[in-house]
Image (tube, rainbow, N blue to C red; front, side, top):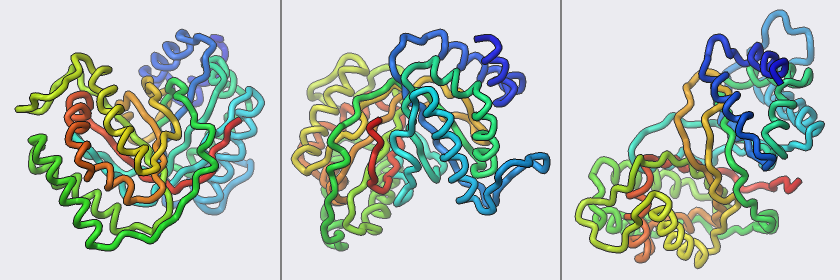
Amino acid sequence: MNEKLATIGSRIGFNEYPQKREAFETFIAGDDGQPVYLLTLARLAAQPQYAAAWKGPKGDTVQQAQELFESTAAAAMRAQGAYSISGAKQPVANAISHAGREFEEWDCFYVDYYPSRTAVLDVWASSDWAEVLVHRTAAFDDVVVMPSTAGELNQNVNSYAHASPPMDIAEIDGLLQAARAAYVQNHMDSFTMENRLARARHFAESDDGKPINMLNLIIEKDEVCYPEGYTGEKGTTLTEAKQLYAKYAGAINAQNGAMPIIGVSHVMPALDWRGSQPEGWKQFYFVYYPQRRNYLQLLAAPAYVDALPHKLAGDEATLLIPMKHGLFNMG
């Protein structure tokens, strides 16, 4: 294992970034034989960035470099029983930022399945992975790779496909007015409320009537903290608060045809990054919405008044990234 770690370290910079070494060693030491996901968030480069010394295949465009990254990564992972669940998922609108922080936009997202943590070690130390990193560097300015537990994958997701007429301005206005009422009732500060509503409007006004997959990235609070003045049901722990939110929000989504694609997965410290520093995400999950209106219907539902306090109590920050709906690889 030490030889493989040395190979990986020389490629991703253990000497320059000791925290990468610590994260990787901790990740491998915790191997329990269970599957894991690797999440990759990336921002595309303006032009392909190949080193002058590289003599192998090159993409003439960023898109071609990205395609070479994906094809070489798929071949290297396949040898260890790993594969990409999602392929490249690209946002269909700007991120809908919830609570606490502002974040830069990401251009694409991958979620890859590995049968064990040892499989990650074997893939990243393989001779084929050296070429993968060349194309990744060429295609992306910023990259963050984070391991997570393998949340439950909805096996029916590829059967979902709906389309409907896009929302008009009157429908959007009505739904956002109802969402505002829920925010006000939960004593949300004006800046956060207006930011959320503005992002939700931008998302809604670019509606094309097609389904979306919503990536949810979560940073939890250190301890439960309910909104000031809230006197309803409360969770005494972060887990209890999040379970209460899932109970209420999940019921609303189910009524509107929204479904989980990948269940809650617990994110571990990033193993690799280039450009931006890791943002410290602790959870992620994917939700399928038949249309964009179904997400606004969640925010506008009267029952969401009961759900929102539990989300505010447990989550410091949430980043929602709407993705085009596409097929998922079930293995």
